[in-house]
Length: 418
Ligand code: C6P
Image (cartoon, rainbow, N blue to C red; front, side):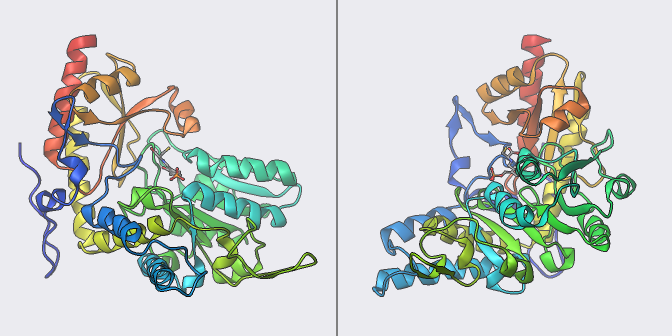
């Protein structure tokens, strides 16, 4: 079977998936003697050569600490690190670089907001509103801060298709809601939440809004000003960038008022034993030596990704997802989990024939990498009454040939266990 024909958007070149695949060295290897079919980009995406080269170049040429020394290497490393911040600002359409804080990833970004923003704000009886489809990273930090403050965690239920409906959300929103924390895209189900609409409702009640963009940044357009969220968190490694680097976007007005999350070098203007004066934004939130090469690698990933027409990439991914949905639905004994209209990039499924872990093991032996388990979203599993699912998830490099390979490997599971 062939890949979907490239999508042509306006005068821009169409997205050529076969050409893009050449950029990813990891794709061109054998796994258990079979060509690798990588369908686990929701866990982490593969890295293009441009990102690998950028990281290597930092260590080979500009290996120095930043913001600290006058020597040339340090100046070059500092300039590259700050250029990466500027690339993130442009990517998110944030107003200023002061609003872009480098963190270790989405998890650290959400914990930062929970401890530095929410802990000072929440009082006994206040509420933090999340949804049933959140990743543990957007549940546990709020549980911790609720325990610390006496606030209550409230959950908006999802439908059996994995949607979060406005009515259900409004039902849980109240004048006691101080913070609303929502996935932009669900990692277990692929649901795209109507975050702009839900943000508006939350703001109308005076609540602050954090969006967990871990699964969104590489699959849907993100514009923090259009979304009007107060905070937006994402991880570089799901956007074709390195691990160990992520971003917290926050509105400057709020970040200014928040105390530091961690103390240490670089986040200070002056220190005596009597008093410390904190540095300006964004450095107030970047204590210690940051992952310099990873931040620069993230900048390279953003350049790489934005080098394509994003609408064309998203359309390509939608076409592959639709193809995969049809293909899996046609296999007897396969049940899809998460069927929200407009969903993106992730297909969770169960097979009558075998436990998800067995499915994962058999398809791996055919060279096909998928994730199995609860996907760090146990409440989602509980909703569907299962302990685990198998999940195939897409990156820009996936083709319908990859889906055909997955389907063949699922028939192998059927043969062995059915
Ligand atoms: N989801 C997955 O396989 P970190 O680990 O900080 O980079 O990202 C955490 C995180 C937060 N929110 C969502 C919606 C996520 O999907 C993730 C990470 C991976 O689905 C690993 S569990």
